[in-house]
Amino acid sequence: MAAGDQAPENTGADSTPTEIDPEVREQLLGARRSIDNIDAALIHLLAERFKYTQQVGRLKATKGLPASDPNRERDQISRLRSLAEESHLDPGFAEKWFNFVVAEVIHHHEQFASGSEPEPESRSHDLS
Image (tube, rainbow, N blue to C red; front, side):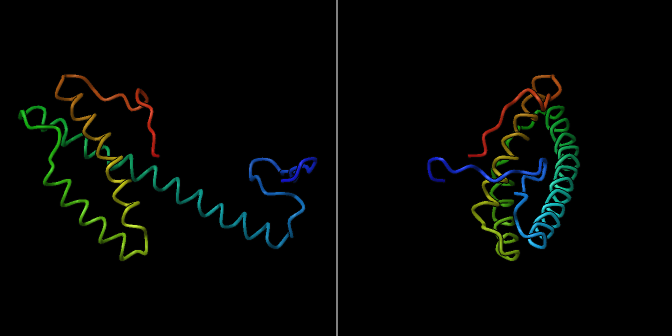
């Protein structure tokens, strides 16, 4: 934006400029609603996933097993990279996402091993 130019006026929560063509605006809003729904589904799926990883963590803690399972992680990375390729998603992104999730899972497993319950809000995360 050049000096002296003003940013387009926004409509509020949807952050879509008001002077955009109404048809384009509706297409954007429709796509964004779909994205919001998918984001909500992903959060619910992650919550469900963490219920199971916490079961695994408790079991590992009671049996004295290590929090991390490098062989399982390697197999999962390979499987997820293949799924990503089949889905036309960047396999590197899928691996990065998986590593991020696994780091949190291992943190939870370590907390179980130390005799405490995981507190998800206690950690800040950096996806970069």
